[in-house]
Image 1 (cartoon, rainbow, N blue to C red):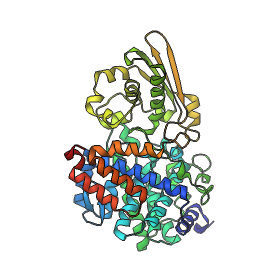
Image 2: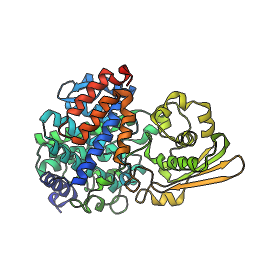
Image 3: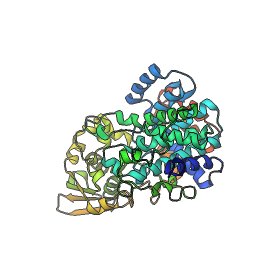
Image 4: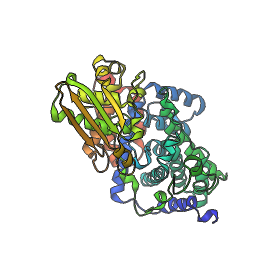
Length: 466
């Protein structure tokens, strides 16, 4: 089989063909939901220390005024992509795709938006390119998961860089050959290690930003004439061989090609109701359900057992020196859910991480692998079961097969708007948040990026006490 008959070339043909067709109405609205969810995280993250550290790097290395880095003014397209991608993932609030365990918006949208601001591409063209790239990113991630994760790689930048490269190449009107070469070049940028779990390193936040930047670079180099391996996905020394293993055993080409052009896996992305690792959400839901149903006092809890799939069970840390430590901790988030009946961004602040009552309840939480949950993940859900033992000897239990926010248990448009307000109003105020919501739903242009940036930098919400 020559390169023009393989998986990579097949994908490139689909990417180019897709730009000639309108988006289905339902997908068009779903895409705007994803943009709204993404921007809420960008705004909320833009005032944090990680954002400021990356902004310092961007100012030194990517100066320019071609695109908007929300909260940090104008930058080059690479600088804006790095910053907005980092901020999209900066508070663990970004949506995701369970079968691929990845977050497509935080990689693909910053890349597409930055280039579109520079080129002046229209809104429909922007959305089509973005949707195409996110669809591809989800499919590539799902084709190799969980083998890629079991080899210690972070699927969001790993598969995301291909989506960003394809989306930017499509936005720029690239030919099939240019898209295939962009994908080939992106393969040499793919990366992102889960080593951040040991010591809770904040480089995790950077991973989508890096992939967004590298996707732009890959597409631009391909347009300039640099070639990449156009069998990068399926080749014997290509992406899946390196990061997953054997086809049909560790990775499955059909997860990329089945239904491509007819079905959109992107419509199966979830919205996070809690700003923490998605693997924790089923247990949080179960804890909240138990609290609401049985009305026990937190101090009456003597033991908590969480049974879930193995990847989630690995998130059992109880050292909470950083926000990220807590956002990746099942014992902590379950304890907070049992105490408060909710998990919000303020629960990860230092005073809450070291709160004596939170710590006492956290120490009662034991995390175990549930065989049925492990068999179900990732194809059939993210199950979790929480059992609470009370001081009087009573034991209550609740099991969640799909956490809140998945397509089978969805977050409504109004609930999504509530999430956006909760994240954005403390930073930009009520009026600017309302404008942002309205502008994204309308999606007439990308002016909402500059408006959000100005609102963050003026401190409008905080200064007015809105």
